[in-house]
Length: 205
Image (cartoon, rainbow, N blue to C red):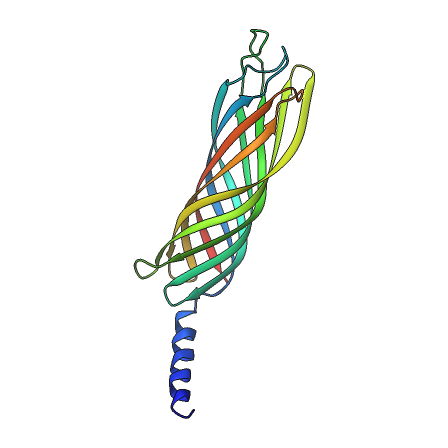
């Protein structure tokens, strides 16, 4: 037992020095969002054609907060986040042969939770994988019909964290969601793939 005490003390000392980045953090991101919307199961003359695809992209912002934990070369951090998307797709081709006008489909924003984990490849440089869930709020309009709804779906991603002095870090990441949404008059389903690239700054307290 006495022989184990020095080893235990040395291990605790090592972990305490290696875990100095553990703590609460807040962050802000610049976002680039891309959405691909493909019509499925269309059954109405005023609905878009089956298979019609509209893509859109937008720069916007996001905010996040969470808890970071460092152990030797392992990094894990959980976060809650909000992303302002405002990605609008216009003018789906309708089954009647006309084109729909206006913002037919708008991914407004999303919020959710993520868990990120990775191993350092260089001092202060850590690639990581992401898994989480996000609730996406969207609206759709066609003529006099309009809806506003939300859809929860998992997200998957990759990223890179670079630690800087004074408790700051730079974080770059990309995540992907697949969503099953509804067209304005609910006569069609829309399969939406959403990819969000972000570059942001994190401050740990």
